[in-house]
Image (tube, rainbow, N blue to C red):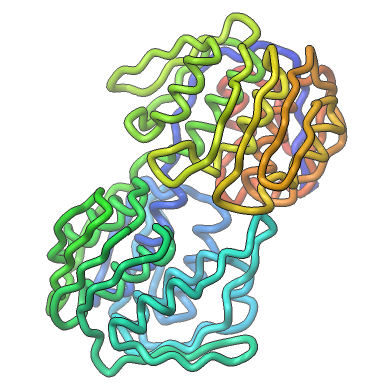
Length: 416
C-alpha cells in the first residue's frame, strides 16, 4: 500500500491551494522551544516531517496539539537536553533543534542526524559557527555534547550560505548575551519566515531577508501566533506537472515572488504564466522548447529541490539541454527511473545531458527520496499508461496529500 498510482497522458485542468511551507515550519517549530509559554502556528502542513518534529518536541517536554492545520506548542516545561537514537537519526532536519536547545537549556547531548541519499550535508559548518558563540563541543563516534554556560554574541561568517547553519546561529543568537553579526547568511524565504516568527515573539533582528543579519540578544521571548507562508517547492512541483503534462492550472496562494527562477525558465520554454494576488496560473498548450542550460544555485537561483521535477519536464521538451547540480552531489539518483520510463538522459559528474523524447511510458518505479519521488509523479502525469511509484512515504515527507492535489488539477492519481 506504500505506493502511488498515476494514469497519465491527459492534459491537466483545475486549481488547488498550496499548503504551508515544510522548510519554513520545521525551524519555526524548533524556535518554539525558546518561548516559555504557548505558540500557535497556523497553516501548518500535515506532513511526515512535521509529525516527526512534533514527536521530538514532545520528547523534550513540550505539549503539542493539533486543530485542523493549526499547531499549538507549549514549551513551558521543556527541560530534557538529550536527543539521541532513532528520533534524531531518522530525520536530518532534527539538527535545527541544536541552536534552540542551546538557547533554552544551555547543554545538548545529540546523536548525529540521519544521512540523506542526495548528499552528505555535513554539520561541521554548524558546529564551527556555534563554537564562535562560546559553545564547547565534545565529539564522539555517534554523538556529541554541546554546552555553553552563557551563549555569547559574536561575529560569524559562514564559508557557505548553509540554510541549516544559518538557522542554528539565529536560534542560538536571539537569547545570547550581546550582539551577533552573521555574514554570508542563507537568504532563502524560509529563513526570513523564521526571523519574522522570532521578531513577532520579541527578538531584536536587523537585515531580515539579506545575507547579513544583526541579532541583539533579548532577555526573553513572549508567546506568539504566526501563519506559515505557502510552500514554494510544492507550488513549483505542480507547475512542473503542468509543464510536463500540458493543460491549464491555477495554484491558489502560490508565492510567485519566491519562484522567479522557475517562472523565468517556464516562460523561456514556452509556457504562458499569469500572476495575480490570488496565485499563479499556467497554460501549456504545445510541446515546450528545451532549456539549453540550467544550473542549481542558492536562493534566488534555481532551487535544487525543483531540479528533479524539472528534469522530468526537460525529458519531454523539444531539443537538448543540460542540467548542472551544484548543491547536492547525489541529486541524479532519479535518472535511472526516468530512463526506465523512456527518457534519454546521461549523467557525467554533476551534469545531466538531456535529449527530449516524444513520449514517456508508464512503469513501476521507486522513490528514493522526497524530491526525486515528486519528479516521478510529474513524469507519470505525462507518461502514457499507468505509473506505479513505490515508497510513497518519501513523498509524504513534504507533500500533505499529493494525490488529492493532483486530482484537483484533473489528474488520475490515487494511493495504491
